Image 1 (cartoon, rainbow, N blue to C red):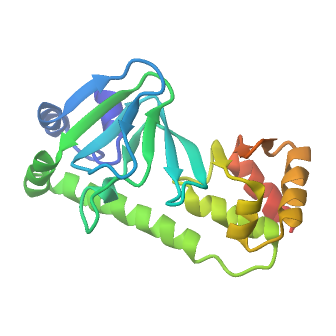
Image 2 (tube, one colour):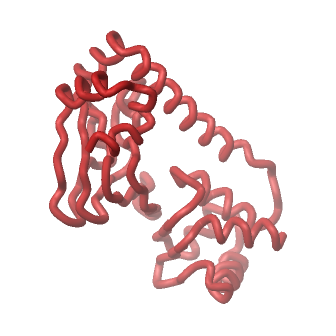
Length: 223
């Protein structure tokens, strides 16, 4: 367990005594299999979840419930550290186990104690928040392009926590075209081309991307 803890970005740089102390303040448990909800979109965030082992599915639904985006995230991972504080302390997505996982939780009062007593933990938390904000800003500040493929790639990257790995979009073709301000025919042609290149798999109302990094490399090199 000590090795897994040292790999977490929040605990890097700490000595054994400091990590042991945090273990005493935290709860560590194993989930039993798949499809177990860790936290839910819109639920109040009053504790920090740290994924030590395994993988989780992050699932985000649009306000109108006409669009669902899903990706797989692997340990070590800190679940939405930005949602613990600020104007709206609520989770932005559902997090569901994809396999048996080991999780550590820190309650909000314990977080406050750590910020006060441990400089390394406080700096690691600030660095993690800064990295998340910088990633988000980078995705939002993409240059305008009339290229449908690039615009769809930018949309997927903006919705993603990381620009690699498995992603799934559940949306009607006409709704995706409306989001993109494109014709349904152009979107359909693009998606079918990507499927012919084995970059995505299309099913009814679903677009599955096995490896986003491969799709990005292909799309940006081709246009």
